Image (cartoon, rainbow, N blue to C red):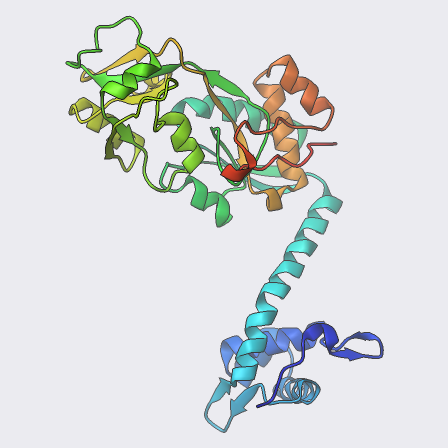
Length: 342
């Protein structure tokens, strides 16, 4: 069996043995499995492809490809090398992209999104101020749903999201919006006529649950397992979207704590919204992947904080190049946002 030496040990004249062209040729051929197409993709001759592959095989000490007049296939060693190299090359390309972002400043494109209709106006004010400050950066605004908000951040479909806190595993900026909580109940529910109720009332009725894709910390905040006094909260059915959850409420399948803006943005004759007089406000702000903290993202966080006229505390944090820490413990997966500095 031929062993592939770690790339960190494959050296020539004191340097790393693999050069950029060799890496590109190897990975392209591993994808195309055709010398002619590889040469066409890279804009070089087929002979050059063959020459560098043979050279690389000599340095590795084993065959990377099985080839004959009809087919080209990766050997087990070649497949291992390809699997090891792809993430390394992707990481280098990402590092170069970030360096280019830093050198260009705030330019290019930024994809921002909102979750919940009532947050859209605040986001659009932030977009307006950001665009005025940075006319060379194009902003694309999108709406996401409970079902795809996290996935959209993870797969890079969006760069930054205005959403409710807590939002596990993401960097976050200061609180931009707050709203009181109310309890959504069916129009004929026993609590529908009350002027206000306590959070303790959750122990008496099933609570409609958010979809599985939402984070654990968010669920604990919105649909807790226990009341403040420690009473267990019965779990109701799970809804696939916010509208579906409200429909379950209207059907009498359970109650649901929501923000007070639901009255305006989700008015329904079959639902009553009753104030929760002893509940903490819901907090919202910007979240993004910590590894995607580009200068564009930093500048947008600053613009959003200025556009929505945050509290004096948030303003002070922005000026000092700091952010608010999550109220959730570190074990819950929250991250402190990287510094927002000029």
